[in-house]
Image 1: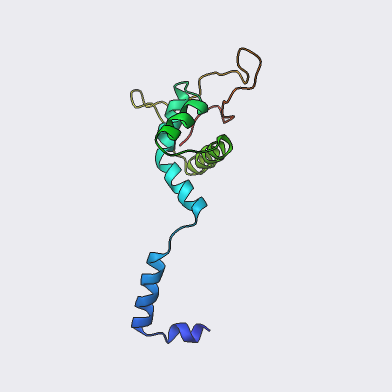
Image 2: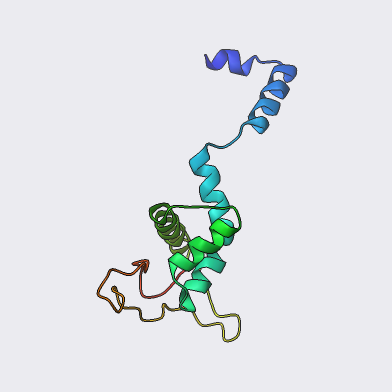
Length: 124
């Protein structure tokens, strides 16, 4: 098999390269890639005290509807990747890493809130 690859013509390799460049990512990869582009802004909004419910409503109004579970999964996954790379989301004014506002896990009626359960600091 490796012999056929080694003996491939430049034309065959060129055709292969064009086909590889034309491949589209699967839906999950595309979703993760697109979410990663807005993650910093989502994390900043959460650090300011906005709820995931508010963010999901804004996404929906923009035609980008996500279920809460998918949003939470994307948020945590992106945060973990950025944490692994040592990237932090920092305040644009003072440069300090953003921290979550203290939010109780239940609302005033004792119902569970829609807070994302993450580390104490938001890391990007």
